[in-house]
Length: 317
Image 1 (cartoon, rainbow, N blue to C red):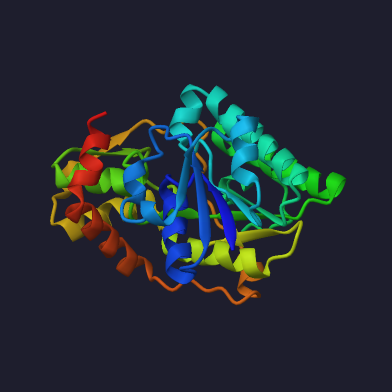
Image 2: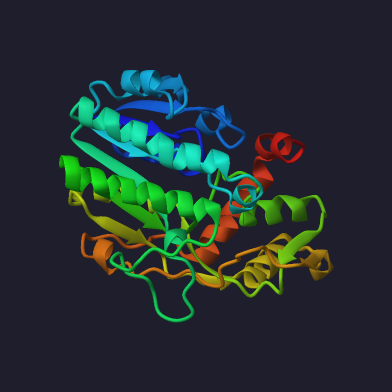
């Protein structure tokens, strides 16, 4: 088994690399990563001897062609992902998330790769007050980030229809776990609370997200790699809906920190109220989340407490 994992030095990508190596020790893994601020070689510490690492941009055809050659599967984790950054400057999101995906799809077509998996997000659906989105629901992205991911999804589906490319798409809810950049909500609040810094919450903190542990997400993506059907989309969520305020209070309680660290600020532009996805499709393949949220959050907090060497340089940038 020879896999190309793009964005493999990022949060979810690096966790997927570790997952594959633990489940398939003989797998050949090529990691392609541009090493932006969110791509960190330290995310691959301890496994670099077991992979081939290529520093490069998915927007560069020459690098992509060299990386894709002889691979049976390409799994695309590479993306600009932070909503706040996309609101300030959307150009990089369009360039990487859509343009880079197009370069990858062309390489998959040219080199006749057997399988391509596009790792997307539940944010492409937009907000929902009640119920849960199904894979067949229309896309209604609110942020430039979500719009860039939605555009990439549509591009993938067009290559399936036009060229018959063997592609599948995953749309997961909010991930959490080790190696997540401290700009994201849970690691940001954990690392801030450890340093007794304020935890700044948008609005009143009532926005709701479903949280899935990154290990469970990796398990789901691998299941789709093995059993998923070409041209299909698979939602991945764990049914752990929590408001941002609930998350904040849980982090402070687990760290033994006072609620006086909480600060409230004006809400973010276009801030979706609630995300929720129906996961019956991937459950029919046999997937279930294994890590309960309370357990996973406690494990995640302990990881950040035990690995200040990893995140301290990132919060000082």
